[in-house]
Image 1 (cartoon, helix red, strand yellow):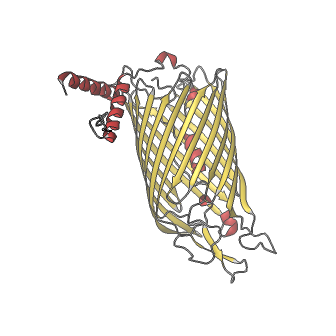
Image 2 (cartoon, rainbow over the protein chains, first blue to last red; image 1 turned 90 degrees about the vertical axis):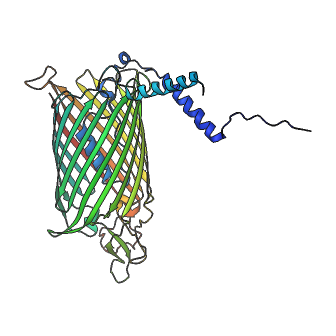
Length: 86
Length: 389
């Protein structure tokens, strides 16, 4: 039986097609990003008990105590404040 | 591509650029000025280490802050290394550091310098970091670079033999993300490359030696002169239905010496009437040994690299800790707006699965390699007062 030639879904190679689709989705997604937690809803996140660390001297000391007795090190710092509402 | 499609593409790229680069309505602000007086004590494994620190953080303008810190560690005691070979340890470490932070809209730039000096160790660290709030301040991105240059020596009865230098370069990337009104999560990645003299000169490897009455002898460790480590930590903090917070974190660590470490931590924070903050934590850490580590080698010079440093041995430790913070001067006093006093205590239980306790047990001695495995408990105290102004 004669078979019909398959129609390509994408005119570019599949891998590049996937990258393009991903990039388009990312761009489309970014363009629609809205802060889903409004600034006036961040009172709990702004509470001092939600800070990753409150006292830098103590945090540095604890890291030091651990690092001099363990093989592992690093990646212990929180990347930013708790509330992100400044 | 037709003109409309081109316009749509340009429009999307512009929106993306705007989200990444254009500042929103409010700028980042610096925290309150503060001064901290800090005291710490570590007791465990035959060691006593006391630490005293003074920190001042002061805004010069609304955008610029400087911080200075002085830390003194005093070490004394007889660790497992001392009991097995060396003389009593007594040393002081003095660490000075300075930091400058500058805030511009949603970006915080930070530059730090740390100088640490002991009789037999000198260290200079320079670091730079950048913190960026984005996506409506729901996301905080942190990038960091650290360079350290160390001089390593050995104290032989007051005479310091400088053995070499070690350099390390570290890269940090962190993302903190607000997920809901009650939940914030973060991921931190850290990569460090070291090169130079990386061994601890006070620790030795041991090998079977029938000419020694103990059945073994000790010799200077031989380490690779490079190491690269990668650590990834994920963490989340949740505001409970009542006013309290719970934090969970997990860290995966791996390095080119074959060490894989896993760390789990759970913290609970409970304030009482804006005066007290009570905290409790549990932490568990476990690692395997470095691939060139052995508690006992068959003969001297058996391999190119040989180590018997307990930091490279397989083992685990469990920490249980508590912290209480008392807030006082709520209405301020003279130049101070408020103040807190904090007491923190931790109990840590260290257990090793391939590092043996080779202290002298009296006669008859254990056969080499049959001594009890080493373990010890440590208690860590911290007491500090913070004045905000």
